[in-house]
Image (cartoon, rainbow, N blue to C red; front, top):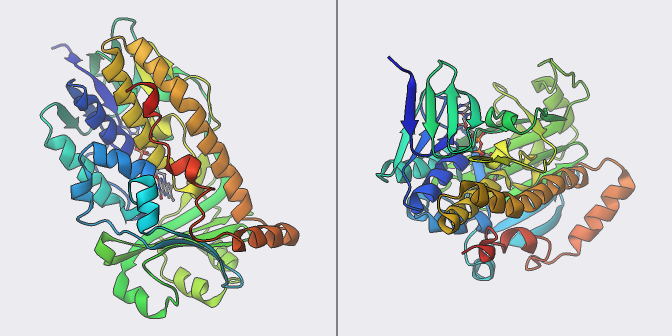
Length: 400
Ligand SMILES: Cc1cc2nc3c(=O)[nH]c(=O)nc-3n(C[C@H](O)[C@H](O)[C@H](O)COP(=O)(O)OP(=O)(O)OC[C@H]3O[C@@H](n4cnc5c(N)ncnc54)[C@H](O)[C@@H]3O)c2cc1C
């Protein structure tokens, strides 16, 4: 029996980017298959922040009602000095912020976001989600595209979007580059709010980022405020390529041992079971070929310091949908316009994430003094530093 099958339109990867892309493709009237390698669609037990540039798109795709069942609307984004415990600056996320950007800043559990997107996909009769589909290679055939799975199954399709994350197999069609190690590592997870609440010493309705030399801690509530999400990040001096013996729990304790009491206390709640080494990639100049293109972390993986990786994947999904609306079955044109719009913006976020990392992790005392001084002079209503990120809606003006 032949293992070559026809599928209409394929998205590789069932992460945030892939599921949102399926919704965007279905919006254009096309039938679409999502191929996910994992046995089920799932996410890690941690939180995610979504800025107005992302919630605008979730709203367009009809997912916000479901998300609102669990999402938390934080009051402020706060930067704290992890060593002195002093507040450095805050951004007010209240009514005037919402009015300005037209959409809210939210925080939620990743699994809740994933399930909301998945539900919207399963409720849509144009979308089919297939699991246990480990894609090995993607090819452009000119008038079709082809997806080959690790088990040899081959799908011949209209077009393919590679949304298969930082280790994307689809990306290999364009470039054989490698992820760039930042030498930073993250430990993250959620704990029941009542276990944390008594001793935290901060407003737990806020998104709080504690920053210090070569380290930071992010905290915010998720799942209707029932869980508290924490991410600790630090630079390991013991980084070695091809080794997992760096960024260890012992190093974590050493780094955070020099922090103020609330930070030291918070870090005791962090699970040491799993570590996430932090990688990104350099921006690339082309990610489309004929009937194949890339999206999300497969296209532009970035360090998480600006909390924009998922937001940018959502922007991609919305703009790609606009291009498919506009250019019909001329996929080459649609993908070319898509990348012309999306590459400069996502590359700028990739580069700014690295830069922001250097700023928040500054070691030099003079740099820290200058940084803190600049931050302390900013009012909570001043949004000038985030306007370029939050107010732009997936470049919609150019196409639709
Ligand atoms: C610590 C941390 C905190 C972060 N915080 C935020 C935040 O607050 N806000 C924000 O917007 N972003 C944040 N990000 C970034 C965000 O998580 C990513 O940018 C986002 O998940 C990218 O989504 P994606 O769908 O492109 O890729 P992924 O989430 O990586 O999904 C890729 C999917 O493809 C599947 N896949 C991979 N290879 C194959 C294959 N060969 N065949 C089939 N399927 C395959 C995978 O199993 C996975 O399901 C953070 C990242 C980290 C590490």
